[in-house]
Image (cartoon, rainbow, N blue to C red; front, top):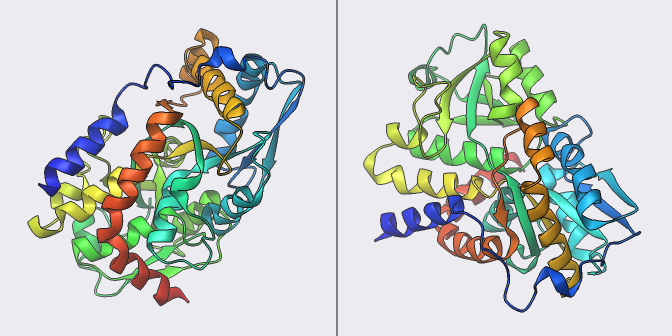
Length: 339
């Protein structure tokens, strides 16, 4: 029963976007953003993957909303929680929109994190731009050649972390389900910072997205040892998925964290956002994702996109949040260990 439920949710996450939202057709407010300044609050630093995607999409959002300017404002901190808390308190007029990883917004409340001062299901979801596989990577010179070596370390796996973000929580679930000990070292400023720690040997490994890992892997500075996705990646067919190697009674936990991670880089607005603003942004984002020039640019830049329409995502996030309650004891324990 649980397996069927998670399979259905996963299929939904990858399904094509719904055609539209009844009662909120884009024709109601095609000029909502015309000649206005739209502020995209990116939950991460200026050199991170979220910012690179936000800047890639920004000009096309300006084109399809008619905005005078699409401004990118970086707000790093707490693995995305600082930006989410800020968004929770903003006026719901549609002029300020969060862009970042929704997985953190789901996982932090499940963990009882005091840093999460919001209810994720009450945000207004405007659409997912991309979802990509995540990998557990180690340094190119590391003694860890495969994931099997992690369990032979004879000590906790040292995990450099930028805080209680989705990768921290994912690592906690992996440690629990796959049977190894983890020592999280916090205080790092982002993916680039934790990657450098792994490359230098200050940490054993970290979790990162496919697009962010490519350069270092190809240069031999990092090596993937575990895929955190529903299936192996074609570029790394010899790297197993976490679910493949998990004991039978732990597979549902891995499936749960994978499904949550699939929510990935998305646009959200404050609770109760003006329906015309939400409809206009959703319509514009859909137009961006179907814009031939944008599609060509993503291919040239090796920036994959995986669009999900906002109303569909709103429903799926609510369902995943409920189903993810099984992770709560593990997540709470992880948070307590670093406090």
